[in-house]
Length: 460
Image (cartoon, rainbow, N blue to C red; front, side, top):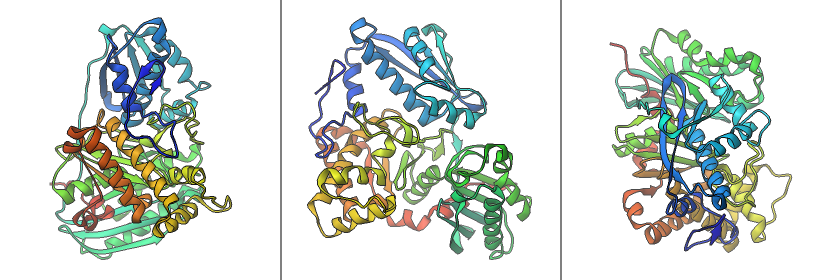
C-alpha cells in the first residue's frame, strides 16, 4: 500500500474500513529513508519541556509527506503531552505553514482554542534552527497508592457520581448517585453535589484525613481547566469551577486533597491491582479515555487526551464533529466506532436513538452471534492492534488495560482476541512486551473511587 509516496505494509485490513491508514505503521515506513534531522519541543506549565528528535526527507518531491508527518506528530504530541509552545527546529517552511494552521482561524482552530483555555495563554508555533532546540525538562509526579488513614474517594462521572469511605485501605461505605452535571450551567449545582458526596462519606468514618478525586477533564493542580462535567458553565464563571473541589474539601476540614484525570486514576487502579507500573488504561465508552502511569507508578503530568490524537491518515476518515479533524482516536475507540461501522455491514440504526442506545442494538446482535456485529468488533480489534504500535512510540507500555462499555460482552472478547492475534503475528516483540488485557478481578475490586482515595499523601 502507498500513501504520499511512502510504501507501507499491513497484513490485516478492517473489513468495513479498507481505507484505514494506520499512522504508526505509515510513520515507521516514512522514517526508513528520512535523513534530515529535525526536533520538536513542546513546552507546558511549570517550565516542563518534552523534546522529540526525528527526521524528515527534506526534498521537494516529499514536501507533502514531510508536512503530513510533522503536523500529525505535533498533533499527537499536543494531545498526549499538552502544551502552549511548540518549537519546530530545523524545518522553517513546515513551521510557517503550521503557524497558519494552528491559529484562531486556521485548520486547527479547535486545538488553538482548547490549549488557550487549558493554559490561559495563546498556543504558539515557534520556528527555530535545529541547534537552538530547547533542552528537555521532564518531571514525573508520584500518584496515589496511599492507603493509610481515613479517606474519601470521589469519582465524578458524567452521568453518576461515586463516593467511597476508605479506612486503612478497606472500603467501609460506597454509593453511586445519578446526577446531571453536563446539563447545568450554574457551577453551584456541581459544587453542592460534590460537597454532599464528601459529607456522606465523612459521616461513615470517625474523621477525614484526606480526599482524592477522579474526574473527567484536564487539570492544572486541582483546578479543572476543561471538563465535561462543567460543559455548560460559561467561561466567565470559570473561576468558580477552578476552585470547586478545593472549596468543597475545605468544608470537610483542613485536609489534603488531590484531583486527577479519571484516565490516570484508572491506570492507577490497574497498577494497584497488578502491583506494577508502565500501565495504560484505555476506556472505550462515550469517547476514548486514556491514562498512564510509568514504571514507578508515577504520572508524567501529560494530559493523555488521545481521543483527539490522530490514529488514521486516510483522507476519507470519519470527521470528529467537535474537533473537526479527521482520523482521531475517538472515532475508533468509542461507541462512535460501532455506530460508524454498523451501517457499512447492513445494520440500520434508528436515527432517533441515542448513541448509547445504538450501541446496545449492536451489542444485542452480538449476543445473538450475528456475524455482521462480529465484523464490527473485529475491525475495532484491527484498529487497536495498529494503534498499539503507534502508542508504543510515545508511552512505555507493558500492560494495556481495556475498559468501557464497548468492551463488554462477546464484542469485547473479539476486540481483545483480534488485537492480540495481529500483534503476535506482525509485531511479536511488542506482543511479548505489551500485554493487552481486560482488568483482572483484583483491579476491579480496587475500583475507581477507592483508587481516587489513595491519591493524597497524608500530612506529617
